Amino acid sequence: MKIILVSSSIRNNRNSHGVALFLQQKLYQNSRFESSIIDLKEEKFPLDEQRYIDFIDPPASLKAASAKLRSADGLFSSRLNIMELLALP
Image (tube, rainbow, N blue to C red; front, side):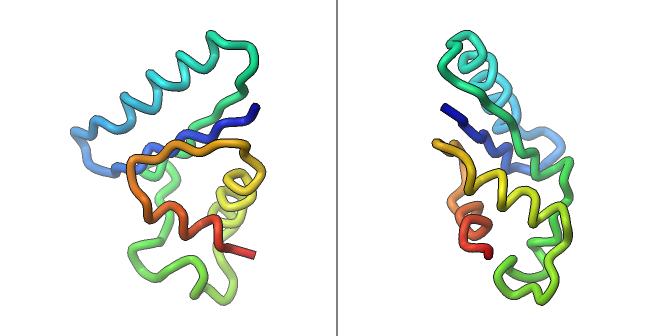
């Protein structure tokens, strides 16, 4: 089962990234799960400028993240606005 963990905070003293790393470690301990983290601080998605669905030609990093999310069997995110990426073509 493929699980995507989204580290959604971009603040310097964020806690959600530690939660994502902890959950990923727990998932690795169970061989039934494959997991990866999408770190919004590292990716620097331009979602503060406009919504993904409003991009005429979305950046490659956003397209890749959207494809990764849609291919997952499960998703964990501390923020609901990440669901916007799932609506992408």
